[in-house]
Length: 341
Ligand SMILES: Cc1cc2nc3c(=O)[nH]c(=O)nc-3n(C[C@H](O)[C@H](O)[C@H](O)COP(=O)(O)O)c2cc1C
Image (cartoon, rainbow, N blue to C red; front, side, top):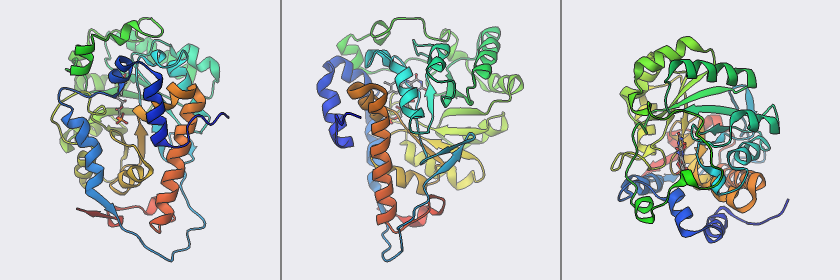
């Protein structure tokens, strides 16, 4: 494999150089003044890792069972749309890059590359399938039949982006991602997005046995409602600071929700940039962490191989953090490993 970048930091720098400023801004920006975006990144700095020395750390347990697959470590790739503007193979390359490292990619509802085409790359790809809207019902039922047959492993409903958010960079750049990369209708009819509600989730529960994940949960009450209405898992996320401006950081939401929700799987994203971020999110109660933008840096630089390489760097950084903190087993990570400054 070509070694086009030698660290996560370098991936960020080189990817930025490789694409136009407008294309870069579209992906890296957040809503409005980017307070939520910055809060996501800064909230990790409020925690310091407690070090324990003289533990034998020569053998580490980092693997994790998730949706029937034994992940090498608990990281997956978040749904992101319009990816063919960064690499011709777009979402297909993200899926393959994840699969080649034994993990999952969640396919965005606005991918111009359709699931049938993606699964042709390899019928065993680990895919979670994202919806923004569950209407019209007939369309949703047909989609569920199709994806179940294709071997999709779970359904994700993104619930935090029911209307378009305000992003100054995109507005000032006059950048329309829908017209870049592969042009095609998004896989979903989007005109019903703003009508999404709990009734839809109860309805969905009756239509499928696939695990249902609600993405965009940011409060304890919404976490409780998610499970009450039929979700199997929640995905704590504020869309990487791209939707509601001036909300709490995703890490803060994780702390609050995990205090009360004990026996349910939680996926976490928004702001993970280093192995120590992974470590901290797991200590605060995430079962699985997910990355958004860093996967795109890899995609820009080297397609599917670049995505795999980004996952490798996260693996190496996380492994180093685990061992150097004196911990040998990811299942033993807890708040006790952190100091809140
Ligand atoms: C360019 C871009 C496109 C995105 N598109 C979607 C999408 O189609 N569906 C979705 O649920 N989330 C989408 N998201 C949000 C991501 O799934 C994820 O929550 C977020 O990127 C995580 O934050 P991070 O980038 O700081 O890792 C998108 C994010 C980015 C950066």
